[in-house]
Image (cartoon, rainbow, N blue to C red; front, side):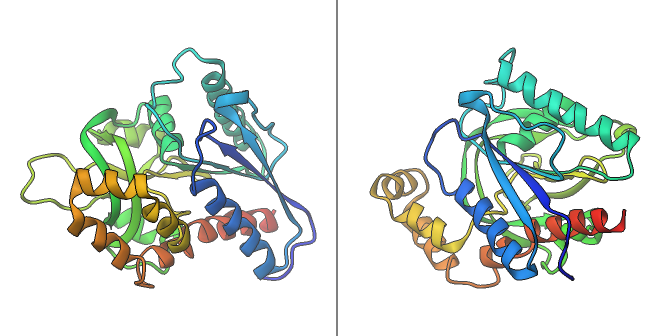
Length: 276
């Protein structure tokens, strides 16, 4: 990719509600690394939505909305959720009227909100918390999607959630032109539907239930916190905890995922801007 002369403006929507986390740092690290690698005139601004109702306008080129704690129904009738949904409407409206498209990536909590908004599947509480580094299975559409270029099938990703999106109905997806790109790992011993892990909502809007921004260093710091270590061992056992730590050393697992998905999304968005 050659250097881009026009400034590329990225809006990062922080859904963490003031809770300390590694996810936002991971997003900003990827943006900084990408800017440096491709020598781009790229800037970003963080908007604290759930605490301060900060929301970007439509004057940014690219939007990345983070994960966050709590229920995806916490924002019902709250001004911050109305602001978020209005932004998605405004960006869709812009894309329907202009050649220069706005690209959006939605992570975890933001992904669940978008599924609620668009009526894609059912957003329900899990029977138990899902936390760890798990294999994720690509669908046929996912294997052909640019954001998953360079990954194996299945690939590995950090999953951290108490909620999930299930009950996908083909009719609803077909009406919207949305595609399921990835689903939960197969669990033959458990008689439960595999939840949706990634959707392309439209050509410019895409999202993941998992955390593509997670990196081995940030994840290791998180796992080594005494409180987190105890909680994981209490919930999942010491063997699972040690397996997570071992998994961080494998370069073909979350390191490859972190170096692939969001950078692929940025490349897709920026190439679309260059084409115009």
